[in-house]
Length: 260
Length: 242
Image: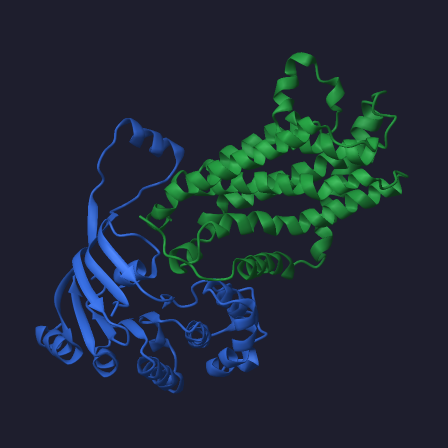
């Protein structure tokens, strides 16, 4: 069993699908793109207030707390949004999957990449606030595109696998929603990695979301290069989810037509 | 010469009712595998089209015409048998398939062109031709939801033919356009035939099939009743009565 060869232009296709998504989402909103900024700013303010004023901790007071929080929120928000839109993408594009002979892999990947538009805006916000708090850009900022690219690849892999499974088991979406709620507490968003008791370190060490958060803090706040262990973690996570994601997707895609 | 499209003893079945697709049902199914009744949409269908030939598919609703087109498009795979296609395939399967109501006509044209495999350059070069052929220029920057179904079909057909396919698959849709556009479509299909392109047309209109296609295939409940020249098959189909 093999799929028909699609002889088109992938870059042009992705560009069009991402643009389409972006237009549909923002055409009917008066504030448009500003929504991408409002949500993280509100969350940043709330978390800064709660953990800066209500439960102040001495060890985090030495650093600009809003930057610290945003380093956690931006990766987490992207993870949740991209994973959920990715996971439901095949079912949501039933009209496309059942009627247009476009390579199916394109659909979940385009869903994740569409979220990158907001991501870029939020990263710009993060960098702006970082500089606003008097932290100067340093040469380790060059690591940022690398770690973000690995992270996006990691989420693409997850979206591929989960979008295919979601066609067969429609409550995959709810499983993922609960999972992301748990994840919020398991990623060091409002607390530093250093306060985690040694016996629980394992939960964090292999978590790629936490790895990106910690690497961001190293680069932006501490002004040091992220340790190799975090980079290796992200490389492994990306290659693992991408290869498994493609594998699952390839096995399941031939029956999409019958199950949507 | 290589055939453009070849179905070799193709059988396609569908599960009658897939049922609610939630985790609970999947787990129950895993514990107690029960064979759901399957329904044969196509049974042992074989035909072959040389480049430049046109085939009309006729038969009642649910006979399997659309299943043949979907399989030929590569949207699903046959259970048994094989399908060979040589050349670029473009399909017009459903009114506005792949179009989004919130995007303008022009934006939909670009997305659709990309999905049909056009490159950036081809899409830019052919945009004018597409708009011109569709005859909906006045509305090209309006969202698609204000389009009538006739206007939508005009646009969809225009993009599909601009993709310059070697094999064009059409499912009934062109009938939605008005007389003027209908005539334009027929003319375009004729020029495709003259250029040696292969066309498969599923239609309830035996007149259309007799007029446009050299060959026809009459299908009933997934099985071929008769295939041959369009005139013969259409005559036999009409004689059998509805």
